[in-house]
Image: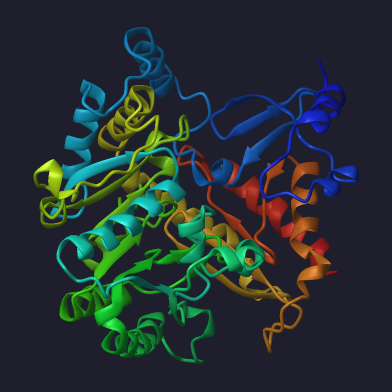
Amino acid sequence: MDNKSLVQRDLGVVWHPCTQMKDHESLPLIPIRRGQGVWLEDYDGHRYIDAISSWWVNLFGHANPRITRAVQQQAQELEHVLLAGFTHEPVVRLSERLVRLAPHGLTRCLYADSGSSAVEISLKMSFHYWQNMGHHDKTRFINLSNSYHGETLGALSVGDVALYKSTYKPLLFEPISVPSPDCYDREAGETCAQYSTRMFELMDQTLARYADETCAVIIEPLVQCAGHMRMYDPAYLSLLRGACDQYGVHLIADEIAVGFGRTGTMFACEQASITPDFLCLGKGLTGGYLPLSTVLTTDDIYQAFYDDYVTLKGFMHSHSYTGNPLGCAAALVTLDIFDQDKVIEDNKKLAAHMAYACAELSEHPHVAEVRQSGMILAIEMVKDKRSREPYPWQERRGLRVYQHGLNNGVLLRPLGNVVYFMPPYVINENEIDQMVRVAHEGINIATA
């Protein structure tokens, strides 16, 4: 089999995600035959550094032998059983470990199969909690501008990226939106912490006005990933936690993309020393092997649903594959690797090398900003550096970087005009240098 034959078969039957399929009349699909470490290989033998961890899920490399063995062993014992009225050791062990690992006070885990589903659970559970507690006026949610929380209807409702949301507006509920604290728009000489703190005043005003009708504030801690990798300071999280407590509103932390070491700590919330009421986790939870997500919450919230069946206070939400044993087995080994390999410590060195390798790009005439949070680094291309005038989105400058990357052995998938790196944690310095060199070349081509 070769690339061409598999692509022809694919285009006859497959509808790809987040894709205008007509693009593939001129932009060939890349059929991947195998993966190893940070590398992907197609059927014609071309290799690509997976600079975005295959949509941010792969933490420890493709075909990781430790995770592979754990999944194989689990498949020989128990591949799946319903989690209603039944349980199994992998889900119990995983829940115990997540509770120990997560911010203090999160004591219960409810599982799903995707990040969007985890967000849906948190929204429904927050709303349902207030109903159970007799606060029937609490029916709304507060979000940040430029946020993204998934593409099921509830998750899409509390997001704010028009590309994904605008078409479906008639189907969605309306959140109360507050301007994002992302530091791209800070004044000259203003620190990120100062800007994020200043921007919090708008959130405080909103909570003061709408608290009586608000279930929860939902945020992506520190990095708005699908929102062009915009970043803000942990000071905002500290202030938000205090305000949610003051006004009697839940805090939902969507760490689907930023959890498990991406921002430099195991969970982004750690950098503000806060505990959300709901912590949504997914993507890297299984090291990129299997779809599994979870929502961690507090005993206070759990107890609001704990009652006799006839009261109908139970949380009647389910997924067929809730707590799937194969996914749990992969997740357990993923956590083992964090424990045994000093991943967070080693990532600090890799993040520092990424910053060093990208330092020159800060002076590029068409780069407005190079920003970084741990193992996430983003480069914002602009038409005019001084005014920060963006390129028109219709020009698809990022697509030119993507094409150059594929032609030179690196999988980059820019978000509009933002080129970013979110590689597996097993990448080495030489691979980082290659990744950055190819991206730099692509930026030169895209902005020429």
